[in-house]
Amino acid sequence: MKYYLIGFVLLISASVASADNHESGVRDGSKPFVLIARMQSKLDSVNAVVELSRLADEAVKASEPGMLLHTFEQDPNDPLGFVWTEVYANSSALIFHLENPPLQKYLNDVSPLLDSFTVELYGSVSAEAVQMLRATGTPTTHYETKFGYIRSLKP
Image (tube, rainbow, N blue to C red; front, side, top):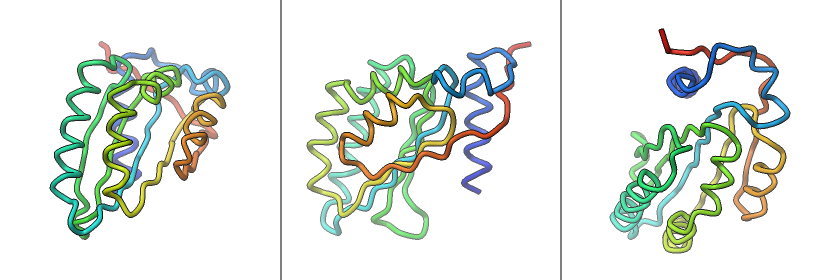
């Protein structure tokens, strides 16, 4: 299911890109990609985590045009588990996100309410963006693209 979702959101995000071989964006971070952030709330913090996340979502929507999809899901098998699903237009959009004051405030406010927070990157992300994310201390796994394409949804 996770891989279906990733493929689907990449297809949606590709509406901003022309049909192209993915290889040309592998090194420079110019292509859309997916970020999955997994969070485990402390038992007594679920409502606060949800509210802080709602406020962060509104702030990101208002301030980050490079964020093409930004959703917050609750794990259906774990009421303390949450997932951010994010699609970025390119690596510069992730760098902007990491430097964005509303995100920094959110991470500062929500971190004490969590037992864990990890990030998975799927796609062709620039080395600079990956290094910047890892420099935050967030455990990060980068699944690098070996091959594939981004299809345009434009007629």
